[in-house]
Image 1 (cartoon, each protein chain N blue to C red):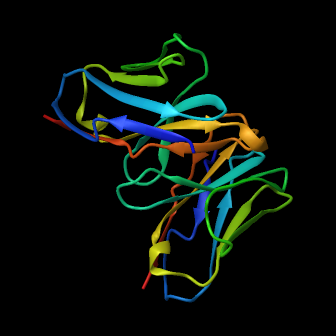
Image 2: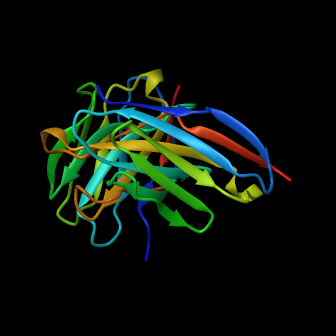
Length: 112
Length: 113
């Protein structure tokens, strides 16, 4: 079975631009969560979606938004990019909200 | 605010050694504690612990949770160079209807031949 997939793998953007990151969960998984991981730190929770509804939001500004589609895939949008948004963005899926989460390979975002 | 502290932050051992990684936590609505291994990018799921005192094992890896003292340990016996990675501990908070994970900074394990 295919694991969690994310696209693109790498991305370079300029300050002030907008970015969209995409995630496809493991087949049968209905919950998707997004995390930001900066160098030397553990992943930090951004959003959780379950059955296409936002179920949790971490301590991130409103520039960050996400949505989940009927096929349970998800996208993360970040507006007005700042240098500090440079990080590895990880998507994780789980069968349901209370099950173990499996991570994708991440998207490495660099903001210049 | 939920908090996870891992120790040590880094560790260098020789092949064949046994290592113990520590994770202490503070969480408002504890649901579970999870261990992940991160080599390049994607953290790989190792264990999910919900009950205190019950050891989970997978090959040379094992983990146990102490809900009274709020900590967990991850043991790796007969270490191999392939065990070199960052080991992440996370706690799951089930408050407010979400099941978000709070991670520690990780323990970087280096196994030398």
